[in-house]
Length: 139
Image (cartoon, rainbow, N blue to C red; front, top):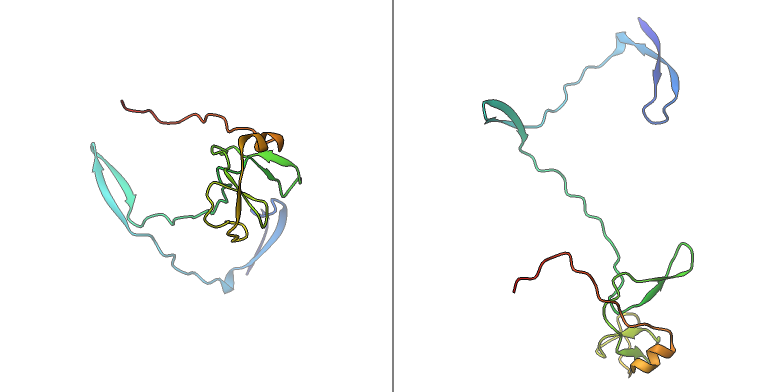
């Protein structure tokens, strides 16, 4: 025996004709998660024992000594909201700024030029603004 009807697809939200052959239905038992009953103020509450799956989202953060970055979407330069440290060195190989003269994180170069504040001003690089803190200090 076949049942014919109309149904709305949850994916595309369109109405479609549905035909179900009830002579060939397979009924399968669904797995039920393990739960524990808890008594709270005279009421029964159910708490799931299995922890939720952890979702890890990787976010690329621009170093605090980079004042601006070129946006990969609009190709414009934007201010780095996390810019808090004035760069002190410039890599001789790639020209990228750094706060130390150990090794360039961009090209692995070892040679650096020290940058004076006047040179940064000439390049249009402003000193970082004071950042507001979201926490309280204890004295």
